[in-house]
Image (cartoon, rainbow, N blue to C red; front, side, top):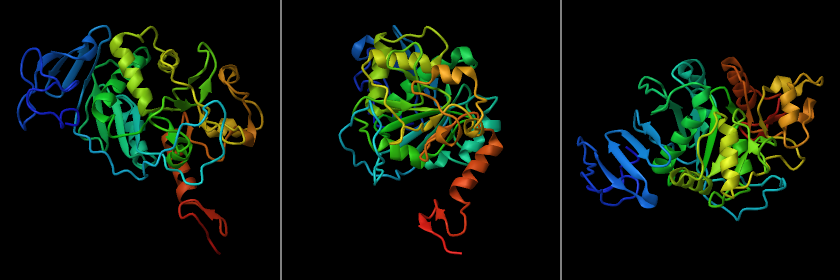
Amino acid sequence: MDIFDKLGPGLCPRCSMAPSSGPFTVSPNQSIGGQCVCRGGVQLTVTLGHCSVSGRQRVAYQISQETVPLPSRTSSLLGELPSVLSPLPPSPTPSSGRLLCWVLTSPQTLWTRAKHIVNTWGPRCDTLLFMSSKPDLLFPGTVLALATEEGRANLYNKTMATFNLLHDGYLDKADWFLKADDDTYVIVENLRLLLSRFSPDKPVYLGRRFRRFVHQGYMSGGAGYVLSRESVRRYVRALHHGTCTHSTSAEDLLLGFCLQKLGVPAGDSRDHQHRETFHPLWLGKLLCTEDILPKWFHQYNYYPSKVGPDCCSNSSVSFHYVEPVRMYMLDYFLYHLSPVGGHNPKLGETREE
């Protein structure tokens, strides 16, 4: 399994130190067990395929099957982090690094929603993981079972458990970590274009910026948000040290509050024309020239919200509340349909009649 594959016998999976009691073995077909006190005074107990962290902050997860990340489709040519306070013009060559996408799902929606992500935008990520509370070896994607309960009240518990898992098993395998719901559609190529403006070695997180409750704003959970590798490192360290704790079920709000405390800036993900790229609602509602949007939409947006064609960037990254049939529609329109003589987004060339 990824968490243990670089360890030798007798080493702790979290800190690579000798355990205080009991051996750690990672040879094939042997058990994994024991305890150690890692850096920061966090005690780790490990059993085969199951880890739990005890101390000030407790999270737990269980790996249901081995994950093999897809080969990276982009290089890791990364520049310095530009200002995250204002939007920048598009980069001519989007080189963002390795993208890990994790989808928050459940046993009840794994086959009715998450399956359609596997069939549409999901494989365009370098690594695609589905976070649930139960394993499912028949599912056509990689499902990681978190030792948490389901329901809105447990969303932040699942988020904390997920980031601990990603930190331990994938921090050296990805540069960017995108969270999406199982009814979110992501245009991965446009996300890579956005990320090419930033460095994963600098703290930053991006998404649809909301303004309530957190001074610098926080990112909508439904629209999806992405953290740099450095942001994930700081966040998990804060969980282990008790700097950030669980106080409400509002996953996106709590994450934003914690990241502000840690000095991780909320980046501006708008395009060079100040149009939004992450969208917490379905495209149809946003495009309507009559304002049929819910009141909270205008109240929560960090920047002035617009309706009609100016609602959305031509390089939009995500849409929320996307029913399965609409995922296939978006996929067809984006990657297959092209007007005669128009620009073919799949081939990148002008097609003659």
